[in-house]
Length: 80
Image 1 (cartoon, one colour):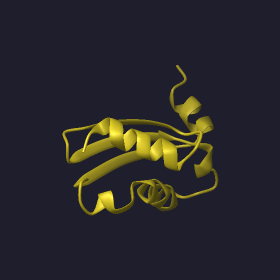
Image 2: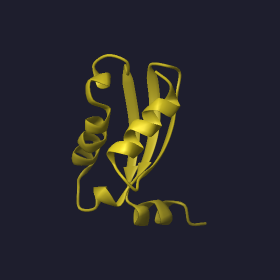
Image 3: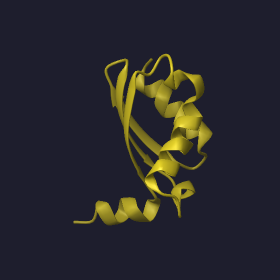
Image 4: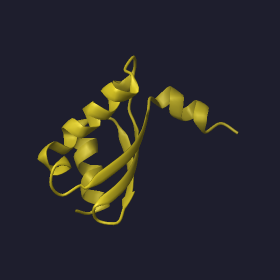
């Protein structure tokens, strides 16, 4: 599976989110920024993202490491 395909799946499943995905075809790293994560713990956020990928998590995607942030958290993390 291609990184761009995963990016599109996440962004389609979480309208208004921004995702960046890099990987080698089976192992991927993602940064997902969405206000849908507001008030959720890390496990809840990851489950939400996994839900956008469906059965691909058992087949096409061997491993997905992710960082999930709200827009406010993203802005705070990227201030200089």
